Image 1 (cartoon, each protein chain N blue to C red):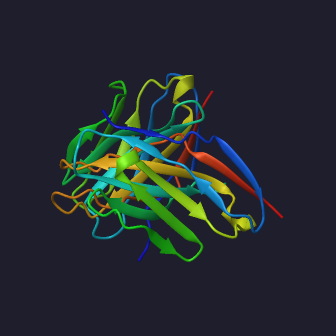
Image 2: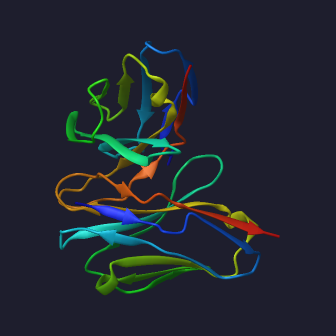
Amino acid sequence: KAGVTQTPRYLIKTRGQQVTLSCSPISGHRSVSWYQQTPGQGLQFLFEYFSETQRNKGNFPGRFSGRQFSNSRSEMNVSTLELGDSALYLCASSLALAGASDTQYFGPGTRLTVL
Amino acid sequence: AQKVTQAQTEISVVEKEDVTLDCVYETRDTTYYLFWYKQPPSGELVFLIRRNSFDEQNEISGRYSWNFQKSTSSFNFTITASQVVDSAVYFCALSEQGGSEKLVFGKGTKLTVNP
């Protein structure tokens, strides 16, 4: 079974631009979560999507948004990029059986650099 | 509020030594889940173990073992006879039951195994 895939793997943008990152979950997984990893703040939860609905959201500004499609694939968007948005963005998927915190499996990440 | 503390920022050992990575967590929930992930230099988080709050049995998987103690809110990870390939950053994470897959991560422990 294929793992979680993320595209692109590397991205360079300039301040003020916007960016869209894509994540394809493991087949059959219904939940997709996004995390931001930086040297200073570590791994921080951005949001989680389940059945095309945002189920939980971390403490990030509204410039960070996401969506999930009917095939469970997910995208996240960051508008008006700032230098501090430079980070590794990790996507994770899980079966999300009702009432349980299932194991999340992570993709390789997208390395975003904002100049 | 949920919190995970990994007090050891970096550990360096010589091959074949045993090493224990500490993890202390905080949660108000009685039902929760604990995880360990490994992040090699490639960046992808690799799942190692998931444990629920009602299962305090220690677990062993090859050279890896985990000690879960609710009395001290700790979930420590031991690598026996370490190898160079064990060099990575190891993260402990916590998830509370409640219809979301959100993970709260510790800051990670960087393990370097020298030949």
